[in-house]
Length: 266
Image 1: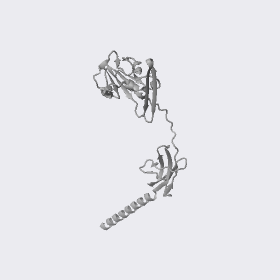
Image 2: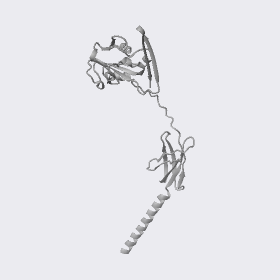
Image 3: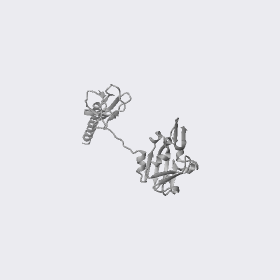
């Protein structure tokens, strides 16, 4: 009885071993490799294309010459899902059976032709941006004034709430009045620096409008970068930046044989 049981156990072990070997080689023999090339519509190779076998973890990426290879695909019917940025996704069916171990599948992708709607970008001009910051400020743009024979003080005198009084001819003292306040209550700045920095004889009329980007007229509270004890307000003249290889000249003639000429070269 013991010998018979030992023989039966040995037979079972052999059968089990043969079964495992059969299953192993059967699965291996029925697995296949899919390979091929990916092209665009002009028959040019496409690198970087992702090829996936649906409902499995098998995938590959095409090489520089467009070639790809996916190995160890078991027998069955599958869908190859092909994706690439700028091209339309496609799917292609493949059938793996025991007759072939290598399946050739060349793929062709069409470029994506998705139309985008028009995009409109809206922004604020520098003038609108400054005037919307919460200060009582008015911005004077000098683009048109630079083409006219006009002085900077005359340009300011045309602005609402600003009055310019000059006692005498060119070079005499100028008083600026903002909403009824004048004298030390009104300060003048050039690019944020007090005009007194440039000397007592320097005035806004010394700067032709052609060199001015804009003039900011603050009535009342001043922003932090113009911190001063001006109660009435301030006038900040912003000069043009980045002017290179240019020359500008102007000549003005007024009453009492007044003649003023400007020559600026950069």
